[in-house]
Length: 262
Image (cartoon, rainbow, N blue to C red; front, side, top):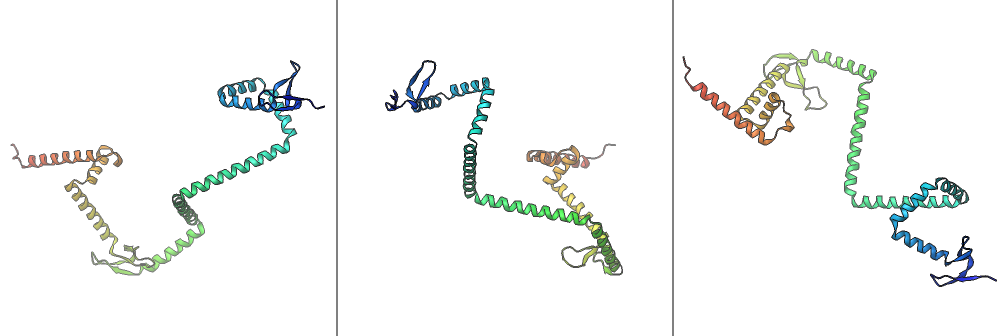
């Protein structure tokens, strides 16, 4: 005949196998296994710090025992563990995909823009790589040198009138006009006249900046004479330097206008 016992917690009559037998006192416990597990789960939830400290202390004192237990458990439940691990991986993968999709839908414009910028950067990088590889190829370098020499020989006998000095000069004395693509046209002024023009323009530009005491001229003075960097110079410092230079120039004018003492 099956023996039954009533649980003092849930009040349900159950088979004796549903109760834990205490070998030290030689009798079954008053609560069933299900109620004991439920009570333990509730206690662990309300006393997390105590439970964690107890578990860590037990694990520290029983390393070999736990290692042997895990080994035996994994051997007995190998298929079950593999199934659980597979289900866990699939669940995590699905969660990651869902998070990725939600993030993409929220930030679609910025992500597409970043992808396009990255693609453009990669294209420029690839072009630069192949260009460098192409430029370093000895066969291509030799072919280019022969082509340039042939072109120079063709242009050697060609002449053009300089629009500035009015002299007849060889094609090689003029800079190439890069504004017209796919042609061999030259600038209207020769190299010497172009250089003189550029130097004169730089000279007049610097004089104009010096007379007007522009921000660029003052920054240039700071960088050249005081060892500053352009980023370190603030607008307040520029204004202060401008006032200082105006005062020094005015004093120099007044000093020149005074009669010289004999």
